[in-house]
Length: 64
Figure 1: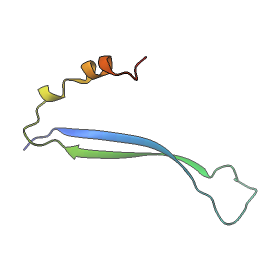
Figure 2: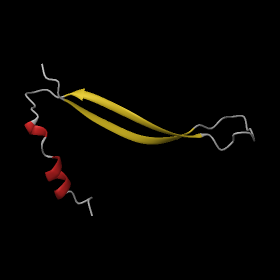
Figure 3: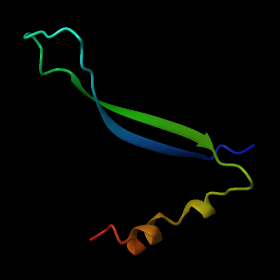
Figure 4: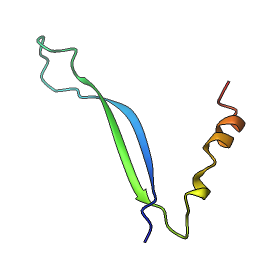
């Protein structure tokens, strides 16, 4: 059994509107949250298989 795992995070905003309109604290309905997921890597995955982040970073068109 392997201890290798992958992690994924996502930041998102939620606007919690209520049916009652209150003047006090009326600007505090927006919440900033982060969700996370961890899952084990299987099928003979190794640490060497994961050593590609630098190459991906250099080749990504999103990195200006």
